[in-house]
Image 1 (cartoon, rainbow, N blue to C red):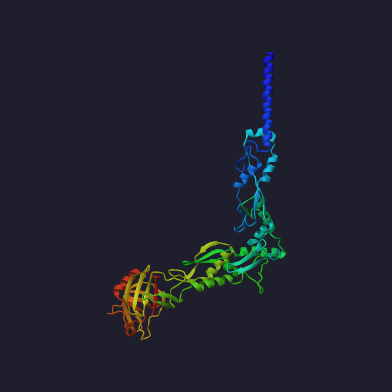
Image 2: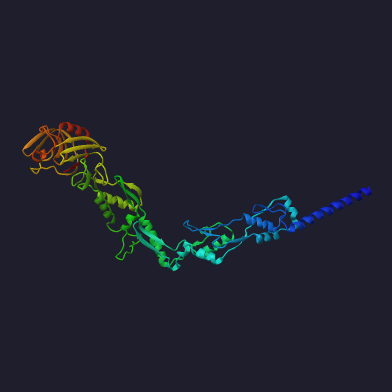
Length: 465
């Protein structure tokens, strides 16, 4: 029994010494090599020397340079070649290896040791400075004292020019870019790097900012006038003209410290709308059926703004900061609003050709000869854009020394109208020059009956020579 115990003890001693020798041997082995389970930058490094790993890391590493992005999203590249960029992993590997304890290699058997290392880089600092200084935000930088805060008048209204906010601090940008290069990063976002700051304001600048807040509030207007198919925005470009200023152009403030509305400013704006869009008696360009563009002046047809009602509306809406599309009130309203108010359904009376046409939605529906006022007796039918303001049947037309029965009567201007004329056997040609009407538009009965049934009260009547 003693002999057996002695043999076991000997065997145990031999095994222990062997294990100890193996442990020590591996510790010595890993003293100059990376321990089991080591991965660096995705490369398996177990048992490999520092130089071997350095060579492999160098083969897989690429660096093209750094892209610098400013706050406006502009991107600029500084290439590795421009700054003579070089790199080496040896120093990083040495530091990492020194941090490892080769006597604790056994710990690596129970886990995977993964690490990412950044190479030690070098570059030509003078070349970098030249590349950095060539970037647009460096070339265009201005002294802080020259950066202004002021209010300027533009076609879009008053605007604030503030050159003292979000200012790039160039030296901070330089440091951020250098850090990115040293850490082998491919881009640096100057905003995220915290390179933009606001500059201090003077008392005068703060006063300008205070006035600007008042201007923003005054110019905040989102009313849109709908003039037929046209829309006229009442926005900052318009209301900036409503602000009261003194003779030196300084803004006038009321007792509450707010901007004042210039006297009659809104009345003047409404008057300008009326001048452009009131069409009663206006001069119009009209494309005739005969093919030429004629100028038609005068007449009773058209739109006429209710300026008093619109002035009251706009004062209230502007003060309440209302946001809406507004259709104005009219003293007289045509079939269509806007500068093109005739539309595509109308009666055309061409007194030179002695023809009358009726268009419905742009389609010629009636084409008939007519006889208009006797020009030799100075009874020529007046030109202008008028409208059918009534429709009657079996009417007796009376005038000096005459009384005539007509079946269909459609007055368009005073006592001048369109009607049938049973007493005439012919229409068209030059009859009107010597045997024309007293000013009315004589029309064959069949065409007149058709026009009477189709045309509505309010239909525009374009009359011209």
